[in-house]
Length: 346
Image (cartoon, rainbow, N blue to C red; front, side, top):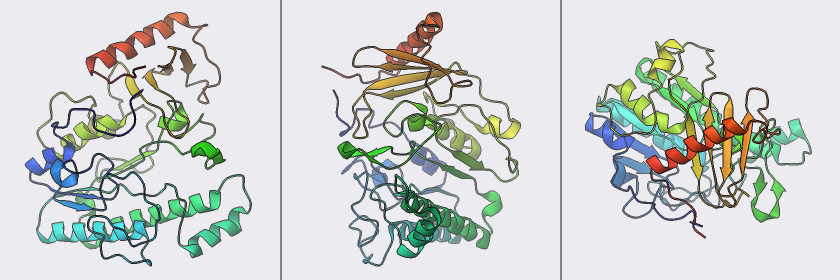
């Protein structure tokens, strides 16, 4: 079975930073990278500025010093979320001073293990929640540090007169972590969604997405159309008026945000061809409308769910809806062949 380290080809593909840089944007990656090490760092992938990004997927402590690019002068009193936010503010200020449009990618290390946060914030949440079967106080406190960061970014945009011409995306890369490694220490509960990070169940792949597009998105508007992270690349190029890239898997969400009409596509797909340290196993999934099928690569087992009536994925309808299951399985396997997806080997 392939491990989770290394690069699986396609290392010469153009990414969103390279496309926007070619369109005249100043580009900055500030925070977690985890997309390759030497030779494949943000600087080699179209970013003018890299702060805090290298091969690592997590950090041993959220308190400094941090031996990472652009953070070499941090001390034990620095908290990573605040340090990255300060770097992001500087990037925005420098871009404004140069009168240059900018693309800021700010992937915070929070919320992530180890759960650690400045004590005054943690103490307030401990008083609120008391004893729980999982560390909800520390988790909530870390979410607050993220919220504060977002508030600082918005305040900086307001102060510089950039808020009306800046689009904000806020999202996550996976659902909440259920258990910490093999120790099975309970970390979060994604109920009513099943499972969590590392799984193809909704608890692992359904994330919040907030888009603020001044003059276009309506405050409080909610769309229930399924969208997926590969949609961000064509969406951002569309919003920026940049030349569209060819051969992308995603679709622009700009029409959805303008009109409320969901994109017309056959299905959305997921592929996870390895084991995870969160308990996940090699699998893939496809969603078409309300129906979702998961294929487990170890034995070919499939599960079928109607997410409209069973968002918790407790009633496997693969046998009762065998024709629908076969249709979705065919779509999933056809898609894997089309994108030349790497599959497990025994």
